[in-house]
Picture 1 (cartoon, rainbow, N blue to C red):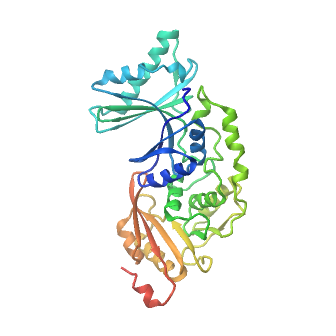
Picture 2: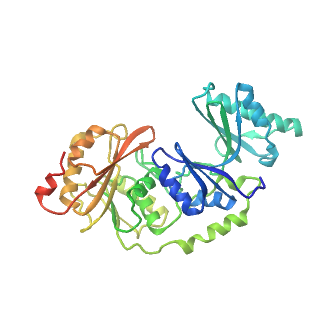
Picture 3: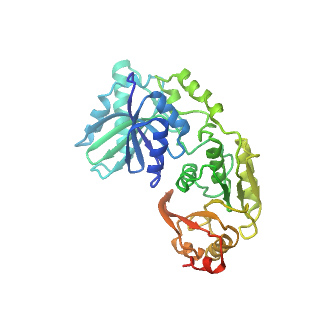
Length: 389
């Protein structure tokens, strides 16, 4: 683990790969390759640390260890055993192994993780007579195994917990949007604080918080207490502290445009207030307890991004009527705005009554979704009608 540069893989959600690649390029990543739900790149330890702190659309940052061919189950054991694990672990450390299998003769991820664990434990036992322990919740080293066909790739997870766990969400409603996906929506919309930003169905406030973090240039993981790499044997606290110490000088203290969340639910607004308070953004984000057809956005122009109730996420009395209400509200009150709506309910989307100028396929957990862009033009009623499906 003394090499200066190495292969790193950042995992993300389907549809956000290109956004993540641009983030990594801005951080100085080299040899960037876009993969399914991941981006591979080349960098040093400093970049590994920075990627964990600064990437808004990464779920995990993995340090590549080894790739080897497997023809049978025993090859898993042999390949893992061939690595000198004393470079990564001491016998008093704890370990966890996550396995993902794609199109392979091996079908049981738990079995693969067990074989890999056996190899590591046996190596320590043969060398020292003792063995490291397994800890699924908070290990000192989390390993990632990815099997595709006959290839097995082993990596160390430098993030620890998934990077969507920013550290600011104190409370949530049912099925809140993933923070990484929320940031991805904002990036896909191209918003960076250059106009007013509104989420008229803001729920627990995730989208408006992510928008404020982007506008203020606050690292998304600035409020996390710990990362996986901080427990590694080669961790350099001085290097890590130097990266964190630069953050205050990079933060934008002023937002010229407004960031606003609104919701019909008093409970949602109360939860959003607590989450916003946890990151000290009370003066940067305005909240209103109003339904979408009553709330009035700032006049002139801006960007709307919203994640309305749909399908399995929430049960509403009449999903069709809600989407009709959304469409009518957009047409009446959002002239000059670019409106982005994410939903997995393809039938309900039709009742918005506007023709999308852009469609992007994404996933919200297991749900296949569409992110739709609607341009709400200023002008006559006749012009607005021409956009209706």
